[in-house]
Amino acid sequence: MSGHERVVLAARVRKLEVSPTVAMAQRARLLTSQGIKVYNFAVGEPDQPTPPSIVAAACEAMKAGQTKYTPAAGLPALREAVAQRYRDSWGAPFVPDQVTITVGGKQALALLYMAILDRGSEVVVPTPCWPTFAEAARIAGGRPALLPLSEKNGFRLTARVLKRAIGPRTRAVLVNSPSNPTGAVVDPDELVAIARVARRHGLFLIFDDTYSHLIFREGGAPALDAVAEAAGENLVVTGTMSKAYCMTGWRIGWVIGSRHLAAACAALNSHSVQSTATFSQVAAAQALAGPQDVVRELAAQYRRRRDFMQPKIDALPGVVCPAPEGSFYLFPNVKRHLSKRMPDTVTLGTRLLEEKAVAVVPGEGFGAPGYFRLSCATSLEDLREGARRLADFFSGLVERSPGRR
Ligand SMILES: Cc1ncc(COP(=O)(O)O)c(C=O)c1O
Image (cartoon, rainbow, N blue to C red; front, side):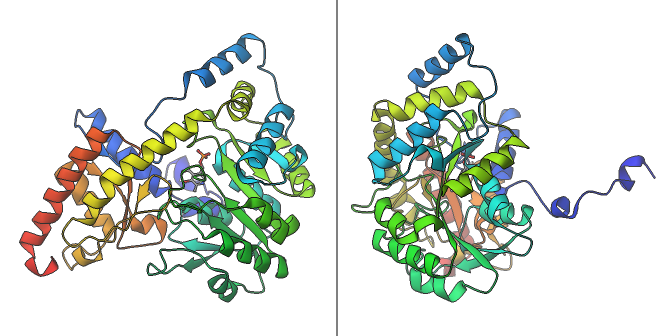
């Protein structure tokens, strides 16, 4: 027996696997490295580079010697810029003391869960959901209480549905709007009602607003002042620079909550990551405080891509794909194509990649078998060719089993 076989890892990682969204993108990249042109709609990041003004700000910061540790809560200028942006964009009454800067939105969630979950505490996680919402809770010793949402209601969470999911161990409820993967946007009034329920039951309302600048429905943006008033200290917002500013690799995110929670998050940071990179923080502060044209242009571009792609996917034989209200994802229902020969969407996704060099993420990864997630964060040319290949694929399936049209 080699030494490796005797090594025992901790229980929390024994069943842990790489996130399925990352795994599919990795498989697509592997094919690309073998010289195959892959139409990769599995990636969850903007295809555009970071705006040059943000890159220049980081270079300047490095040259000016901004290369040392920052406070564990983040650079004061960035905490201020985050709070200010929420005040300007969403009317949220946040102040810098409530903000903790994190290593992207993923660490925001990890940190927050660590701060609020005891062993066995539950977080209500509506599904379909981004896999990390559930996995990060398990890693922190908690339990995700998965709450399946109805497709008929556009996968939107309501206060009524939430109430039924609250139990004695519930500590928090998670709302991600617009949602990854469905693109669903929670109704603003409903979010206030959810906030009231959370407060009444002494729960944290975790609002992940990663895609909040990408809302396409009129009146779909939440009035965070009303939500904050209804939830009080129970409101926690997790956010990131990654998507709206094309800064996935810069690793800037945040947790905004009560001062008490912010102090706990900073203490946790001080014993783990300390902070994210200093020059990333300087550049992010400037991006948030400067003109927001970049964000508006990006949102307009995603809207054009969604408008181009969604009708094409909805028109595929046996596929139903309503227009998402936000984010850059489509989440078509392909249940009519599942059969004994193709029992799940993992098989479907694998065949799609092997036969048509098109990568999507199977719904199983989001707790929603029978669907797949297609990201529109790719060029229009790739979307056009991808749509053609998907049409070939699904027409081929129908020809082989005509009953499935
Ligand atoms: C809903 C949601 N929240 C948070 C994140 C975290 O992003 P990052 O860690 O790049 O900030 C993502 C990334 O895909 C996401 O989809």
